[in-house]
Image (tube, rainbow, N blue to C red; front, top):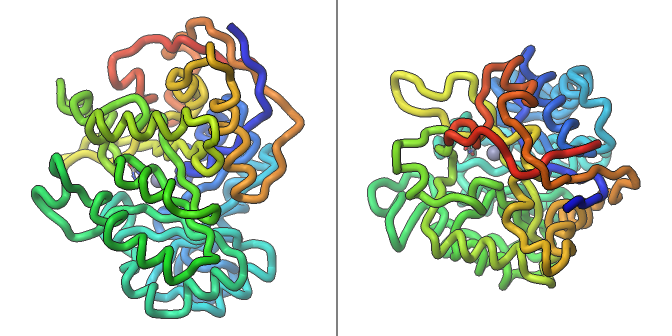
Length: 360
Ligand code: DOR
Ligand code: ZN
């Protein structure tokens, strides 16, 4: 089988910084990506819009330049969201949006995931005017939807988790208070989050990663497959089924691809395991395995190529790429692995090949 699709946008990816960035950009171009949204949880974080702003962090302006210079000028769209911190002001949002540089902001739960120490609690942002300024200026809010500071069963249990809590307790309040603010519920992993997104209106979108469609916590734990360790954690089969049902639903318009490809050159350290799965170069080949192509390719095309573009107001590219159902040898084709010393997720799980390959 062979499927030709418009090039697509990865609406959640980590490109980091430094020399390895060029390899990560190359891997994304090699999988038919026309553009991407590059996360701001770098070190230092991307927490101001313009380089001239006085804060001593990176700016959306300078991080975009860094990506463009690392080969990202081949992308037709490049969004860098502003990392929301205690220093974010409504004036920054307004000026950034008016200049055209600021399209989105990112909420990180403080200390909840990789490089999220600068995150500002959602509760506090609900009470200042930053979300209001975003709503008034058409800036999208991307959320890492996990409650911070939970432990034990409340952090991860059979009937509760940090994500579950966030979508039951926090999101309804946010949705209700800012009804015109566009929200992206990123890398959702639970049935609770799927239910929230489906009950919300057209201003709520969501991304899902390949690993959360394909794996459960059992796969992580059996043999302690740490390459599958990412946040939010992979969950239970019931949750995975809810994610699959949502992306396979013929009417799905608001759930789209965002790989959360997150390279970690040093995955295991003395004090634990870095969170993040690397799927640069192979994401469409992973995503496609979750769709029933005999029933048609429309749902897959909507999820990968159309829904995210529509939500972020990006044009669906005229350029195409082709997925061919032939084995792709993982050990041969992945530049990022060779150049930047990161392991693509399936290799980390002991798989040597993928059932699909990409032809550009
Ligand atoms: O697994 C993850 N990795 N989750 C995140 O939220 C951050 C990301 C990273 O930056 O590596
Ligand atoms: Zn991420």
